[in-house]
Image 1: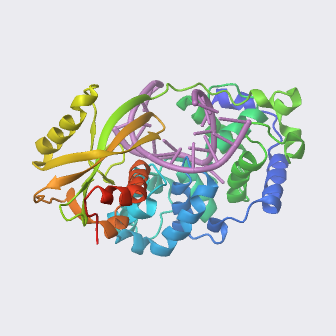
Image 2: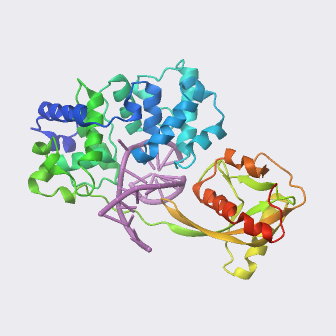
Image 3: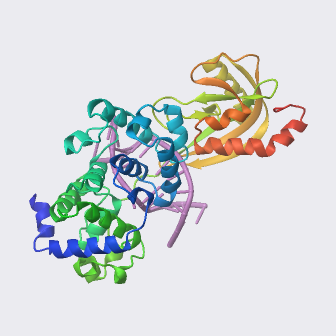
Length: 379
DNA sequence: TATCCGTGGTA
DNA sequence: TTACCAAGGAT
């Protein structure tokens, strides 16, 4: 172990801490859907879903996903569009694509069995240090640390570590410490106990230190400075992008134009109502700019009839402000794998990012009003 | 190493 | 309203 990590943990009563933590977890841990059995596949799916995502958000997605794709084989042979649809609304969509690729590799290279070998498992797509430790400790009982945001917060307080947890080097420090203090008798309960403690007791704000099973071991609590930890530097705030988008119907009003986003980058491979970045701030040129862009990209003529709504959507690193219009496509659309006229009833089958779900919702709400303008929108 | 990659809950 | 955040990984 490195000297920098060692100086934090020397003289730490490891076994006493392990027992307190594990006993507490076995007594107070939540009954979560992915804790019902130790199927490595289900544990893996849950860990991927839980990346940067709250437990309450994940639960319904987990049930639905496991019902649709109950095994490695089922997922390996699944259609990617169905996967994205099952992931719709969860965010970070590359997670499910990486999981898909990784599961295919497990099927082909490891006979459909999640490898117990740390190096082998960690080399799969979308599997980083955290997921490696979480899956292999929980499913197979291997003593590999699983350091997430919870664990860094808990350990920063227990060992009074003031390093910036936003730095990659700091995470390595916590991984070394966790490797040193992890229980070899029950690595699963130890890892889950640290995370559960962070979620239920050692919370970011107003931690319940008086109820904490390991407050005897906590240097920050001893100093009354638990609220000062962990130290985390702030990231820069994102920029705002102005977009124009439109719900574009066919002449008979029965179909709507959908476009598949590029296969990399933001919201990759999800479908959208064609949207264009608004570079000209002049409102009088907005409609022409949009119509021209769609002709340039797809050789289709569209005309916008009226504004539909404004949609604002805040991502982790940027903000969209979308001016949404209602209009029509003139003539026939040359359909491709990424551009389709879709019947209004079947739009539910396409994975849409949340801002575009908002757009569709607005269209359905105002559909009657649009119809009174003299257009037939369906039926 | 810093940035990119979603979303919804919360102080 | 703003800012922060919640079981990270890829580049």
